[in-house]
Image (tube, rainbow, N blue to C red; front, side):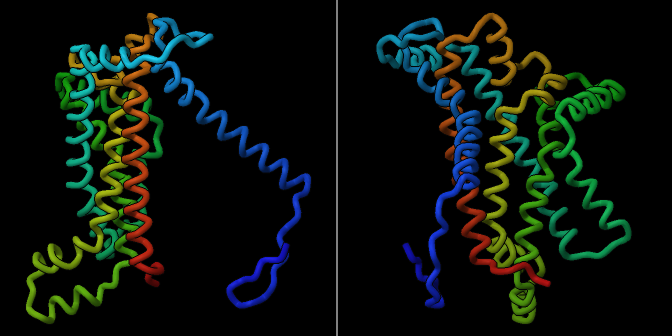
Length: 280
């Protein structure tokens, strides 16, 4: 079957061969390995049996009702929402000025500084958690939910920096120059010109940061005090066995996380299309 390209040249569809078939099978196996556990979690959240095992019994929503009425569980959920929201504020407060500095200014050690900024997100959570625990103990700071927030903000700031910096690289600086020529102050230029152009990158990176913070465990494990976040609550419960309530709340988190990631990806994709190629 022939396919016509945009320039009118006829292209012949590549026939299926062993390599293509093998690649398709491998891709299917990888996707199944990644998503079958999630699908299993969702299916068992609607199973009426209190034991997570086959065969499935009747359909029910009782586990969702019990999960949402579990005070300890809901307290952990709201703690995770608080931690994620506060960590996003820290990420934006540090990440946006850092991205602007990396894009607009040349200074000694800029390359090293840029590498150091993204270092926390590349380190294993175990290392980040232990290092921050050591720091807090050395300055005699008690572990509370605020130490968790600081830890998450430190680890996830690199996401905002990299996304906003990438958007600024595609930003036409002549628009800012025109704004300055018309008499706008630097603050007004940033607020009415620069910020609207990088808004999608900011929102997208904030959503990704919140999603990662919400279900982060290694850093939280070392920095938490008496207040449990949702991952810590789930970890403490599953040591006695997986309950249908955990399946139900896990399903809700999966759905919300997918929605947030999709929205952030769509925002950044549309923003990149508007921005055009990277400036030289």
